[in-house]
Amino acid sequence: MKAFNKSVITLLCLLLIGGLSTLKAQDPVEEQLMEIDRSNESESFITVSGVVKDQKTKKKLEYVNVTVPGTNIGTVTNADGEFSLKVIKAIERNTVQISHIGYLNTLIPINGRNVDGLEVMLRPNANLLDEVIVRARDPRYIVEEAIRKIPENYSAKSNLFTGFYRETAQKGRRYINISEAIIDVYKTPYRDMNVDRDRVQIYKGRKLLSQKASDTLVVKLLGGPNLSVFVDIVKNPDIFLDREMLPYYAFKMEESVMLDDRHHYVISFMPQAVLPYALYEGKLYIDRERLSFTRAEFNLNMDDQNKATQAILKKKPFGLRFRPLEVSFLVTYKEVDGLSYLSYIRNEVRFRCDWKRRLFATSYTINSEMVITDGKVAETTIPYKMSFKQSQSLSDKVTDFADDAFWGNYNIIEPTESLESAVGKLRKQQK
Image (cartoon, rainbow, N blue to C red):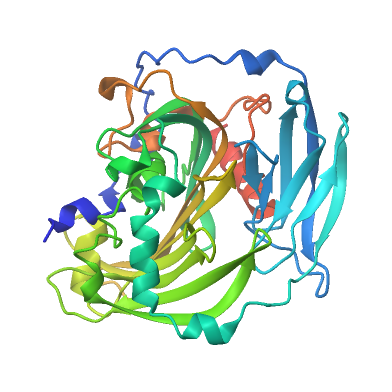
């Protein structure tokens, strides 16, 4: 049995700050960046932006993939269904693809010019998969076969990706921390099934911290940008896809779905053993033809609060009572030229805190998300000394918000209306 500390994904460090002056932003740690060719920064771009909705219900759709076919260029819609994608003119692609689970893919013509204010209506895809054939197969066998085929379904080369990462902390509904960064992600070949040599480097980032005296509990997410390394379930089997771990889970075939115009098995899993640590439960989406993992939705099992706490809490002030409520993940992959690549990761941690002898508890929510926005075959690695460490917090490594044009030509996840409002309020506190 592998040591559990390898499978811990989220570490929270709760610190009690004794006064407003100590809430001032720390100076970012200066490190020499690995030299990466960023010649694209000065190239001519076009922008495609709009909102994605369900054609039937007119509901805005969140976390929809927006990509340039045949490339790793892409982003996702935000919680308001909005997106903005910058495309280099030099790549000479004429369309942008919109895809989402349970919907038909939609192609948006761009023809070398800006396309703004789109209202993209996605049409639900009727489920045409043969349920008789699907339900006759053993779901655990399908998972095992998908694991076996990882070396041929995912990249056999080292890759260097560009990504956008954002994490937010909320006290109740009020934002108290917003941190964002453009990151470089180095990944070794998937046949290694090991993330020990994968690295993340911060290229540029910014933060906003609450300056309210009442926010005496500062919540930090340690190692957040490393989501792209440790939550890559296909490459990091320590999470739950290790063959030795499969007997501890019960697998069940669910109703199949269409994803990227392809039939997918949906297999749910849940713990069926009592171990010294908390296990996960959720759903795996596996391409029926390629037997590749396309999507995973999972959360930490909360049946035992002590085990769940041990899995996510690194440190807390004396006298503070901590109660975990939810630790959930969404991981997606996209196919490019017959191989699957990491595309998007989202993590949400909800918990409640209260001090002894105080009547009311306070709820907190930590959201973090990462989307791969570009990529290429790697010519060099990211040295360990320049990489972002699991013991580091992004808000301690980047500078304050200042420039509205901070991101330049880089693709990001568009901020929601509520997040933009929070940024305005936090900026006023700093003046």
